[in-house]
Length: 324
Image (cartoon, rainbow, N blue to C red; front, top):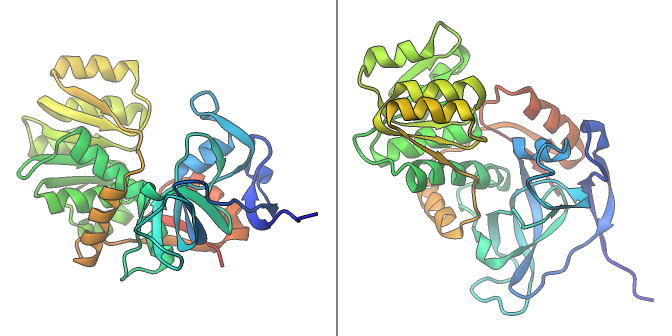
């Protein structure tokens, strides 16, 4: 009898707190038609990972247990499925690895993906650095450019500017020629300025809306919300008439009302895989226009600790798991 190939992975068989995460053997995937099998070298950790683990998205996204978390991957092609051209075994690649059903993610030794989702890994980056890019940087790209249409000379507010999405958004907005305002805690102000922000607002000191409107009394063109809650609602009040609030969190009824008063627009972005945009991000990395900051690099077996840190918030950059 042929034995089923296995691999090591982090997985959970139910929703719950961080202690539902297990490390052990699971079936090793094989690439289907149009797919490649990636030998994972590093997997990025994102807030969506622990939100899925806790069941916060179970009514919005199809899932099947056991679930292997993780939507960011950097690694080496181990096998090429039928019908795939342009890539070969041994190529170093990275990808945003979201699939239609939440089940087989990247906290594992191997992951299979449609070849159309992958892009060559930036040569100048380590696998760990590359794994920090796809979800967060694609989110920033699609929010700022596809949804908000941010262009040269416009003014944009980036909330949580020291975080994963925020850090890439500051850099991409500056590259596009916008004037960038980042909101951050005082200890992150120098970091956010170093990313390229023209102005940094301390959201812990008084009303951050007053700090922005004192400099831009007619309002700003775009606000990127990666915080939600009251921050999302209040963001409408710093927009100019006709401006755009783009959020990566669920829009609230109060936000709609506030935007109507400003005659402003709302755009909601749930990031989609896009290899073409990943290639553009690679080019920016290689030209020195996009940098990666790793908040922590942990072994795969420490996935639970990675989730604890991510849930704690106030991260500077990204957490990445090493898979060897």
